[in-house]
Amino acid sequence: MSKPKAKSGAKPAAKPKAKSGAKPAAKPKAKSGAKPKPEAEPKAGATPKAAPKPGSKPESHLAMVRRARRINRELAELYPYAHPELDFRNAFELLVATVLSAQTTDLRVNQTTPALFAAYPTPEDMAAAVPEEMEELIRPTGFFRAKTKSLMGLSVALRDNFGGEVPGRLADLVTLPGVGRKTANVVLGNAFGVPGITVDTHFGRLVRRWKWTEQEDPVKVEADVAAIFPKSEWTMLSHRVVFHGRRICHARKPACGACPIAPLCPAYGEGETDPEKARKLLKYEMGGRPGQRLSPPPDYPGAPAPALGAD
Image 1 (cartoon, rainbow, N blue to C red):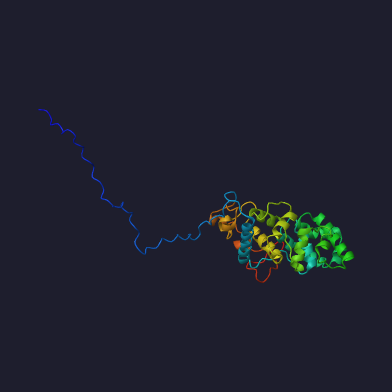
Image 2: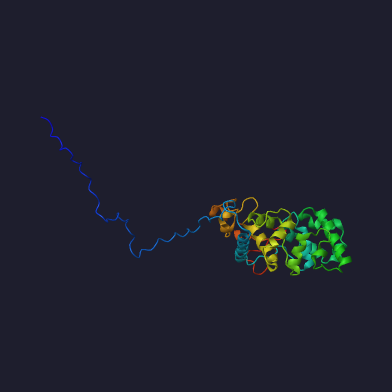
């Protein structure tokens, strides 16, 4: 039997149309009054986040200055007791101790100077010393022959040119044998209250890590950093940076995971980032050990250093 044919001219059935004016289905709305979820706080002991790496977005000079000054404020809170780590009672003793500190630790100098100053308490006494006898006294500091020559030379200059007194001007100090800008700034800042920046190996290493300067020459480093901070901050800034370099931000393996200023540091990650492992790298009072001075200031929280032969 044949299928019935469609009527001639009949149109196919049209698809049903949406009602006029109908709106598309809306996404479900959040409940009225619902609060956004707060960001989770970092867990105790968690690894601190690093500062943005240079290169992702160049840091402006103004931003660097602000970051540098914030680091200084953070260091001031971390080391309110920062001080020169050489034992001294007057400008002459500080000058001699600073010359002796070249290529050795402040601890070794502090263990050596009591006998030295007992034998030669004044420039006049040291100028008249028997070289071989002085060499034996300062032998523990290394390079004892060269240092004896410098100490006797500067003592003669103090006696003959400055009335036996340590001068309080940079221009005069750098004329003394064995005295450069670093030594002069140490003496001026800590014996005379004249602000100065001390660029030693620790200071230079840290300010380059923090991108305060790219210079290697100490004089240029000093100039770059001096331009960032007010003059009144120079001496204490030097102490804080050196303290941090000796205790946390070491040359070979900085304790990044235990560093309070890690969020501000472009070099975060160069050292140990695990907090527990990093804490084991801390030195001196930060690591529960004695400091470098046999006679530290009253506010120093650590134990005094041991005398020569007791360590």
